[in-house]
View 1 (tube, helix red, strand yellow):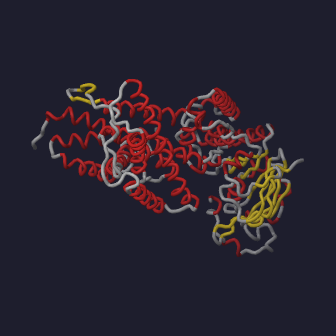
View 2 (cartoon, chains in turn yellow, red):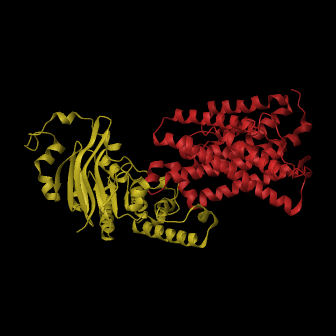
View 3 (cartoon, helix red, strand yellow):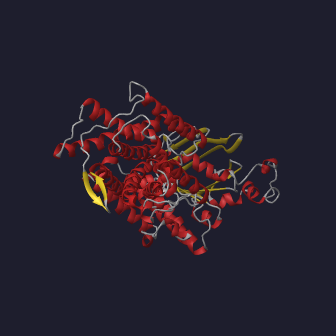
Length: 275
Length: 312
């Protein structure tokens, strides 16, 4: 199977703070790959490095063998990577439909003049974009809110809209940042179904998630970050039993393997995750 | 107080026309603020460039100082719109590229942008004051359109130049409304205004959207410069000073970042400053206008309609 994403020795520093430290991992095409770890472990920073918002300080990131480091975010999106956000970041004062259109617009080619004067090729492109956007609203189960402003949607539906908008860009690799956060059990089940459906369409998924039931149930493989370092990787069942993972989550001593240093635990946490 | 109510029709109509021009200029401030949260204080100079371009093209190069009519006049006006719009729009894009983009790349503080904006305004203004450009003296606007009374509104005579100014402003607002709300480019401008990083990550080319925003704001500012020069029949290096600062006031009054706010703020300010002279001397016009700015900033800093290009 082809590797869709390869991260080699990725390090991201903010001033003196190392948020991601020498992380290497790869994701196979068609996989659902889970990325877990305590708050402040560097998961979101890792996302930001992939999408180009905060490029890595060191290391390589390749999408289907092509280097992504140093490319602008919108170029990386065009190359086939898109993401959702831990804290919802929709365009609140645009309609649900328009939010998805923004993503879908990224695939269009016609320029400014064509869009103002409505040339035939532009009109065709717009129609295709509209059709695609409608399909995505249907796919994500939010078609009935098409003309509603995004900010008026319920929390769960806003999360779905984030996914629909990201899918609009036509990603090969979709990064989901805590998509189940704040959802009730029914919504979580719906989300799991949706994520599987997206994968079945041929989109590879990299998932950050705190809900163990969701992430372990969905993922083919899981990697664990703690204090910016990868401490484990493998099948969900194996990773869950890894003493280092148990320790990272429950604190030293709890897993029986207290050999690793404990002074690192005082490093600032929670803030890195949001940058 | 001693009020001259007989002057009401004239002052009302003048206020309305001037207000529409303020609104047109205010668009440049408000759109740029909407996407970058930057007050482009150099917009007054961009506006002046629009008037100057017509002075050079029609006045200096083609010597069109005799009144024309019919098709010739209509074509000259159309060419005038295009040239002034492109001159100012192009200058605004250049300004963004040279002065603001380098600061954005470095993630500079807001104050740096503000200082750069004020500096750019002085630079362009005093560049045009040099003898090889406009010089220190005031010039007549090319007289290719004769001034004649066109219609009477509530007893006030309105000349054809003023009618042209108002009709153009209304048309441009309708075009802009369509552009922002109904086209793909407008959609990406709104997206950047609402969340610049999210837009970036959804594939929007932010640099292009920023350049486009400067161009559109500059384009409208340039046409406003053309109309302003025509209505007041003058072109000068400091033409942008008062209209610029008043348009800024109008933008804040209506709610900066808000396109409809610019229209509302412009017309309100134009009416307030002109109607105030019903009861007090005309020399109080400018103090009144700036008192409006101060009062808005104190009591309603987000303006009448609130901030946000997206708020519609």
